[in-house]
Image (cartoon, rainbow, N blue to C red; front, side, top):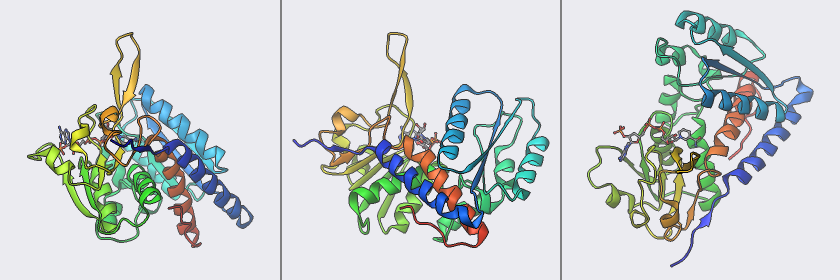
Amino acid sequence: MSTASVIDGKAFAAALRQRIGARVADLAPSGLKPGLAVVLVGSDPASEVYVRSKARETLAAGMASFQHVLPETTTEEELLALVGRLNRDPAVHGILVQLPLPKHIREAMVLAAISVAKDVDGFHILNAGLLATGQAAMVPCTPLGCLMLLKDRLGDLSGRKAVVVGRSNIVGRPMAQLLLRENCTVTVAHSRTRDLPAECRQGDILVAAVGRPELIRGDWIKPGAVVIDVGVNRIEQGDGKTRLIGDVCFAEAVQVAGAITPVPGGVGPMTIACLLANTVTAACRQAGLDEPRFD
Ligand code: NDP
């Protein structure tokens, strides 16, 4: 039995951030400084951590960071007004509204209000449509990061059988679209899939984006497959502490797969790096400059 190589998402993301920083430095003489605005409504501790680290990484890449932290009581109208101002602000090239939003604000309304060109999360319905029809789109950051890791490992993905478990609009569905764009033969599994283990066993590539701790077992994996574990599940350790585990049982999967991402340290670090990449891409498109390639 061979042991899978562990894909170091942290190192890959660090190298990607370096390339992004270099591109940002190249743009400086033209006076273009890519800017990312992050909007947080309310005081969810996990969201606050995400927003802080997004701002830190944005600044570290030499880009401009604009943070808007609004109280929980903010109305939908007030939030839409802020999004409108950011849409018109020429210093802002990317806008991210941290989800989830408080219950009294309709997420769909807010996402639809973000300018398509500044939608660096890729959640706007027009960007989803562009991706689905194979056109240039802003691609959601997490699946974009997964694709970069896969291409780095496998090179050309053409003709490979890919199984994506999960069909959410932020991970599973765009992941499947991206793999299709790379000429994979794609199966999308979900909670109504009849024989999930058998479907998973078909995949040369297996992407798990479910949110169920260690759902995917070692004997569900095709020997030699590349396994990308998007899941982030916080579980009690028993000593009052918590730890993060993925949707794949790593200890079992590592005995079967050819390569696998760990949790933490796999897909997670790629998400913010891809957000920065999308912001630089958005800035270049808005300025009419050549688009950088980060994949
Ligand atoms: P959602 O809850 O929106 O979607 C989960 C998907 O999994 C759904 O399509 C659902 O099917 C499917 N599913 C649920 N249970 C089963 C099951 N038993 N068998 C098969 N399919 C099942 O989650 P997200 O897509 O937002 O996130 C998925 C995971 O990825 C989470 O752990 C999340 O924390 C993590 N994540 C990590 C990120 C990162 O940066 N590393 C970023 C974003 C998410 P159905 O549609 O039928 O309900």
